[in-house]
Image (cartoon, rainbow, N blue to C red; front, side):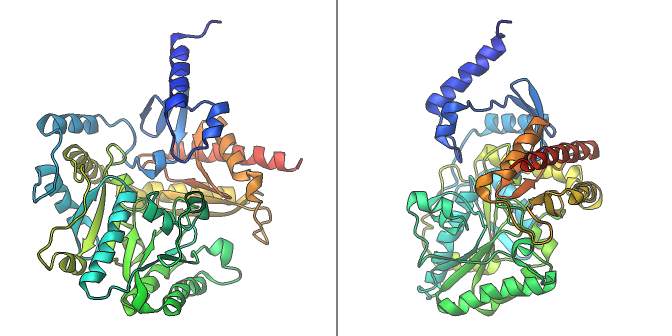
Length: 459
């Protein structure tokens, strides 16, 4: 049978993409042997491409909170573009969408996070935070407070500075990024891997104390800030043990260390509250947001500053020498406002707490009986399935075996998208996911685990 015009078109797109498109987080050599997958459309929790319909249990990259294909989002973008396609926010200029979005975020945010700086990605929001933290301590007359504390298994972006924050040497070494003297890493509160025989509460104390010990080792007078994701999403959906975050916040206050919380993944409702700070009971000095701020419909991010932090930044007359051409872009800001309106109108965050979140947790925990599964972690609509070689000792499979990638590939054959991260399968589906789609997710994942386990018996 001759190929259809559609097939010819797909092949053409793949060819020109391979010739000209340098893909992020992709092995360029792999694209020489296998073409890129072409995603053509999406609706709800499903994406369509190359004649297939796939359940996206990752909401893109943990972005599409309200689900794909919302007509009113497209209408909002079109109307905003017709009214004001672009204007900058430099030199005391604003527009209605940016002003209203800043006001809305200040109303929603926990604690006294009332000032907003707009950027275009989580990386840019965290980069902004790093610059403003240095600005803050210089203005406070403490120029030696320059070192940032981060954690193993952390992910905070891919710019030069934010890459240094990441607890992943694979993002440092290829680019020659040096962290010593700028960033110091401490242990992750990863109970399954490092908790041993400790209770959750005891491990929370142990992991928080590691931060205090590092502050004392270096000297509080040199530590500018501690940065952390409430849930370490990208590298394994690592859930904090009970009581960890209030202890961390207390340590930061004790030693005059700023607390930057990266809510790029968890912010805007994923844990069943607007922000994970509410879920875990603590308050930060700065908070970065992105992904769910517009549900990925437009590139936009925000850094929120506490009143006390903003007072120092704004205390003296001086031009803030920082910004991006498209900070607070009028179309992106309008789309973000519409996204928040939908989240509120449809009570999608409340649904996570009272209905779909508990169902998601209960359904995934049925996988605990599988011989490959060591732990299932769920908070709201973010989850991890931890693979193990030995359920008793928690021994991991060697990363080079690619066991987790094998499961993810087998899941793809079940028309299911999950994300492999070392020996962890990560999921964070759209908030609109139905119970039947969760059943489809778990059934597909169960089948993929079965296939992988059977293959391992022959190794």
